[in-house]
Image 1 (cartoon, rainbow, N blue to C red):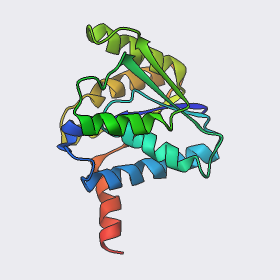
Image 2 (tube, one colour):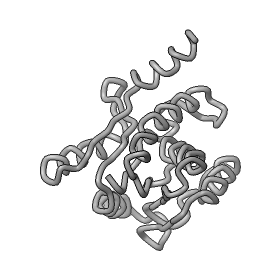
Image 3 (cartoon, rainbow, N blue to C red):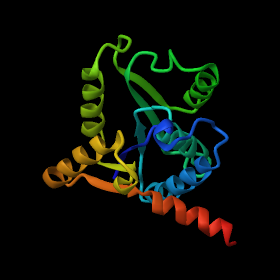
Length: 182
């Protein structure tokens, strides 16, 4: 696999409202565990929609892993121009900090948010440009925005052999439990 889409829950869908939330650490560790073997097998690009939550935490993980895997590139493809425009200042600063470590950034639509069509266009591009997806999603934990990515990925898997890799809440909890009992 050369190009991997990484996405999942938005922070608010996980009831995470602060960058200091301890759950973020375990989500990042789960992402690292899945990404490292792929990087060792020749992964070239990690591409994310760049939304506040799993997308940006994945960016942080990739930026950190670039020290060991400098050949890996990171891209954010947002749905529309300035997605952070209405965010609070601390979130904006965090986003700008993450953008400094990104190799390629583009907005699929060059205008500000104007409709759902922008997300549809972005998602179609993300699936066209990638060979697989790493999705942080757990149906048992409740519905959420990643459900649509899972449905599209599984359809593409049946037709094109698209690779589907998931991280569930159980995976994240087991990492937290391991550390608790070390």
